[in-house]
Image (cartoon, rainbow, N blue to C red):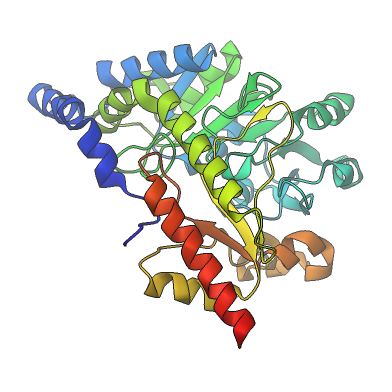
Length: 372
């Protein structure tokens, strides 16, 4: 049996008529840049998510950069984020001219270790970017308490946490703004690069929209210099077609994750992800920690199971950040886990038989290894 890591085509097949109609309509009307389909998605996403403003942008990376720029972050400033994430979380800090400051993860949930947050704050700290990794929410009560104490804005990186919840509040709604990616493999994914910013701040929403559109809210009326980061009409229409299904797809991810955990719970070679109390983990990824990862990964591949590693090296130890002079000792948990983590197949259309095949293959690998 073959089990892909993600099966985007099966999702397309499930709503093919809606997707095809959305694409054909945009082409027929040549509504490729801006226009009603972008505005329609922005309004629908904001409404479903429960926020005042959604600003569509070209990708999730741009959304982080735009928020920071419009908060006035620049050279000489510092922005705190977590050591284990995709580089977008930190490279955008550098792009503003600010310095990224990394913090280790907590061992149980793999998100930013809030106990280290206050010690990392200096007079130059201008923002905190918690990353709700894999669909798991950070400890937002503790983060907001510290941020409010020092009057520091919080920008939530929600690229992997669409509709995740912390005590009933959705990811991206507790800080000054939330950054989203709609990369094709995300829980809500376009058919190319796409992203958005959400915020309840009228002023920030206006600034972000202006900056993302060459500094103009109306064509040729450039109030500031900006960048070109627009959500295009095709991607917006595709996202609108998918949006009515996202909550159901999320529920299916949670069910699939529960099945994985239940089937793997007796395997002492595998540590399954835990879920914080009173939260909704939306399982963009199902990440386990395993022994003999390289050998297991090869064995799974030989048996038709695709896996991935998110991420093989923590951010502060990448060559790009050599100038910061960090060492693995500065991030003991994240550095240690980076050699153990393995992402198993996870998508809403994943079948029970496919999950059982993945688990059976993992168990067979360790049973065979124990007999040698």
